[in-house]
Structures are given as C-alpha cells and as structure tokens.
Length: 462
Image 1 (cartoon, rainbow, N blue to C red):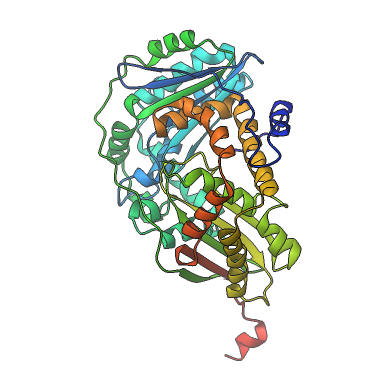
Image 2 (spheres, rainbow, N blue to C red):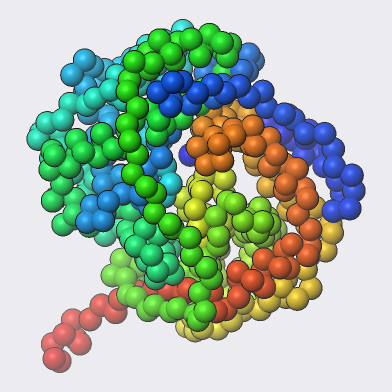
C-alpha cells in the first residue's frame, strides 16, 4: 500500500520527539480502539475518526504464501483474485460498481501471513459494503470460467512482474528461496505455472472452506463511525455465517544461517548488474524485531542512510540502493513470522560484486562494533515513527494496520505501543542486532548480471 504524505499532525509529533536518545519520551497520540468478537469467531476492530464523513475497511484472513498447501504454490494469491469474481447473489462487477460508483476505492493483496481486502468510501456506503463482504465470505461463484480466467490473469502478472521485466523481482522471490530452508518460507508466492494450472474447482472450494471462515478473519474499520453501531451492523450481516475448524499452522520459525549463501544469475533484460543482499530476521515476537526495523531505516531509509551515503553518494560504488526490513512486501509492521532485511542496488559493470558486498559489510560491521551516535539514532527513530503516524492517520491504512495487529497479536491496541517501542531502541540494541543477524554468516547474496548478447560478427564466427 502506498504511503501517504506526512501530515501536519504527524509532523508536529515528529518535531516534538527527543533530540537525543536519552531525552524523555513525549506523550503519544493514542488511537481509539474498540474490539468485539462475534460468537462465530469473527473479530471486529473499530477506530472512530470523525474528521471526514468517510471510512476505511480491511477484511484480513489468516492465509498467505506461508500457509498455502504444498503443491499449490501461488494458490493464496490466485484466491485473492477469485474473491473479486462475484457470488451467486452479487455477480462479478457489482462489488466494484457499488464502491467505486460512490467515489470509493477497493483492492486486495496477498502477503506471507495474510490476505486482505480493503475499501474506502463515504460512510453512507457502510451497510452496502458490509453486506457485500459478508456475501463473499459466505460463498463465491465457483465456476470453471472464473477459475480459468484468473489462472490466466495471475500467469500474466507473473510474466509482467517477473519473467519479462528487468531484474524480475529477484530481490524478493529468488533471495528468500535461497536464504530460507523451510518450504513455507522459501517457495515462490507467485506460484509456478504448473501448480497454478493444476488447480481445479474442487481445490478452490476446499481452499475457501478451509481459510475463508469468519473465525479465521478480522475486520478493521476506521472513520466517521460509532463502535457500537458498527458492531451491530457486523453482527447483522456476518453473525449467521458458521465458524469452521482450522488446520494446525506449521512451525515456520528459522534461526540465522551459519554460512554465507551466494547465487550468480544472468538477466537478458537488464542493462547493468544488480545485487541483492539479504539477512534472515526473526518474527514480530522477537525482542530484536523493533530494533531491526530501526536498523533497516538507519541503513537504507532515504538519502541520509548509511548505505546511501557510503556506497552511492560517497564511493559511487552503487548507482542506487533500496531496502529495509520486510522490503519490498510492505513495511515492517505487516508481517508476523520470520522475514528478511534485504538491500538491492545497481552497480557499475566494471565493479566486482564481491567488493560491493565487502563494502556493505564494512558499513554494517562498524555499526556492530561501535553502535550509533545518539543524534543519528534519534533522527532515524523520528523518521520511522513519523512514517507510522502518517500511515495510521489515513482511515483505510489505520483500519488495515489495526486488523493486522489484532490478527498477529490478538490485541489491536498494541498498535499504540509501537511508537514507545521505537523510541526505546538504544544504540546497544542496534549493535546487538547488527552483530547477531546481519553477520556475514547469515548473509545471502544474489549477483544478477546482464546476459551477454552475441554480436552478429561473433555469431558468424561460430
């Protein structure tokens, strides 16, 4: 989801933050959070915001790349598309016309630990949207035509984003496949064409019955609404849907690797070589997670970051650098299980990839040995906190963040704890995380160089 610009409120909060790590923490802006769990297991989170007569809604299901069945890679993503193909009561197109016809927006996305369906609209559309969401949670139009259509759509998305695109998202799909050992964490979330084509209507129905149950979902709503009224409406539209038994979730935990992993690739579409460097990180429950988010911002959070200043502006080794914790699949707060801190850069053809990795390692090693000066650490934490406030000020983003926090932690109000946790990160925390998780032994590297195209003269000489 695209990050909204920093608003005056977020900026005011940012300016109020301490100038040094040891300064006393200011008061936080606390989101109002109200939660209710229906008898069928569906959890509803509401955060009122009466600044505008609109609302955002995010319906989040605990099914993502990590939880899809083996032999059905990409099925969670495929099913995200299937959820927009209509139901027996609301044929394809009705959902979009109701929301967009009133000036609203809608979308969906699949990530490692969840799939979400989001919408924003005038508050007058709340009843209609709740009815539509309940209707597609009840059942879909399971037809061969819809399945074939969406199989083709997903395959075309893979062609456009991976196969026929320079670098082909190798800094996500390929690097996790090399870094992680467990299938749940390492397989390609887009899915193979073979697995996608093998899916049939029985698979679709089974997947729906398994994962699209009310007791496997959280609905977040934020905007010009009253909690008790929302709870009553959700009970009205969703209350009759039955809960269903859920499969045992796999153990997806993984520790740090013990030796560097390196892959060399070629790219027929790339003009200059690209380098992806990633490190395995533990999930949200680890004490190192929030410090890792701060460290990711410190290393690659914009032009003031250590990697940009050292390798782009400084030595000119790289022409660009991007990355961070859980990049490029959202921000650090949109994942539950283990993830990666990944950095992607383009380097000059005459430069040696190992030299680039060594230079990056030197920057990280210095942090691991020396920590971070108080003024720099305060600036980085301010940026990270400001980005969070800017995100959750928008009703749609707030609804999504609250729903995910409820899904992952069982307590949506813990979203309010994040600013304090960010401020509490110390230089010693950063040093510990850098030395533990960003060590060379836990490093995975993919060097992707342009494929050499034979010249006509060379071809004739063969």
